Length: 287
Image (cartoon, rainbow, N blue to C red; front, top):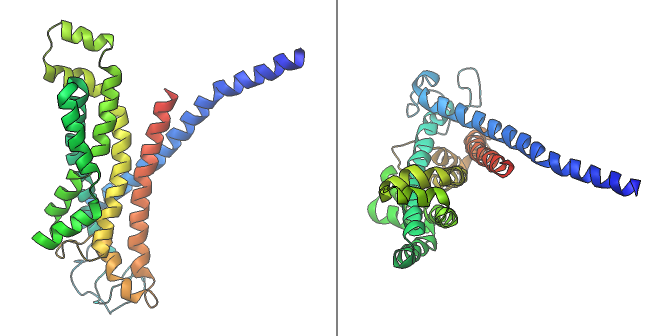
């Protein structure tokens, strides 16, 4: 009997401690991800100060290895890779931020409207969401660029308009779970308008889940943008990490630094977004 009580006590104690450990792990992951993202954002913001060499100018010998003059070496044309990488952070992170903002507005608005109104409006919006959800994003962006030419605006618009469906479905589920709770019914009874209920009552309830999804989505957007640049489908007048990696395809055996540094930048950025989103998710579970 004593052994049974002791075993049960140990089990209860371990169960009580799991959320604490999970929360600590989540905070560490979120902090690590946030640190990586802050570094990338600072590099993008202060690109002119960090990179003193024009990334498009020929500033050294062709395919020079990393040295004191060129920290990350030069490419086949003699352009400084470090400057290209620093300026590429601006374009890559700007694309991710713009796509995330566009998807956030579309996904949250459609999800809240569908979940709150229900009925025919819910059915129509969900069928519309499924239509966008089944579209292959990468192929759609490639077709858009082939038809209308390369450009950051086309990449942002196409990726943004095909990235919101999952976000809308999650928000709709959250609204359906809270639609008939007392605080929503109280706001309706007090005569609050639908817009006020959307922005002041329902939106704060869904934002934690939305932030987690947006963090994961931004990592996917970076990978998609890098894939487009790698295949030469990006804007030729704008340096991105994917474009730098694509230009290194023919020199993998003679210039290891050309694919290494752009690949590391993409990897660390995607890792930062994923760690930050995982940390937020772990914190939500703990609560």
